[in-house]
Length: 456
Image (cartoon, rainbow, N blue to C red):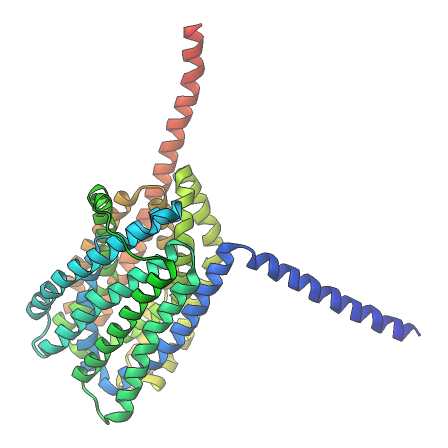
């Protein structure tokens, strides 16, 4: 009887545990931030898997030399990419997260500015790439990549920002999966149809996937959230702030990606291929953090109305939760690095050392991205842009010295130095601005009683 009773107690305990677990999950899912983060993580997880598959296919088929040329071209167009739209995507998130009635106007402005600026910058990118990149990279490849990344992928980005502005991260996640899936289908089909496809064929498939994803994304947002409307008054009034966002994003692209172009120019395409493949794995490891950043950005803008102190406290709460993952990613990248050449092929033997050099980047990026968003949310985008621009210039200058001397090793060293400098600079400036504001408020509060006494 005692054993039978114990069994009943055990079953009852399991039932209570299940009920408690369901209540906990229901409570978590009731939070918009939790739902959006889960959607973003789910979409990012699918995107990670898809990108990992087509990354392996491309890297193995092209080899370090051709893959290095492809990466160099995409990196250089990436530097110009943030100027497409002139910051209209971030302005869409900022304004619509505070007043959803403004959606149609900012959606229409965003599409118009993206198409016009993207077309102009496409021609500019072609000219710059031809001047900067090695002549061994075909001009047709540069043209296809420029059209893809500066027009159609930017339309998809605009659509993703539209979903993000109304905090429907489910749509954002599905768009990211769509973009990766269209490329995977094209790349896998090409690999099956052609025994040894070259970089030109890969670029054609790359553009085709971007066109399909961009057009579907725009149609999806228009039917789901509303038709676009033009409101030129917003464009003129917010042109300076939009430019700040563009410069900030471009600076981030420079210290993240320009080194790949510089390795191709100052070292070899093979070195650029090894380094680009290693950095690609860093980007993959950082995808969960990017998912959380996407989910929390509208919240930073709302909290920012209370001042920098509020956004810094919000940033600290988030950092405490995500830093353990970044540390785990660091350890996983360091320990797992020797396995990568077995997957990509023996021609990528040097990637083990490159990946270990870069393994600390997820930790540094986590710190500086959340600190930077605290500044942006509180209206200090100009300060953020100034710091990022300075770090971008620092990155280019030390790359000019390190890459000719040490190849991809110099680029890896400059990446660690640049991200570390950025994290430290943003933290120092954020703390300084917060303390300055607090002292100013204390001074105002203490002066008011004196003024009242004098008046009495």
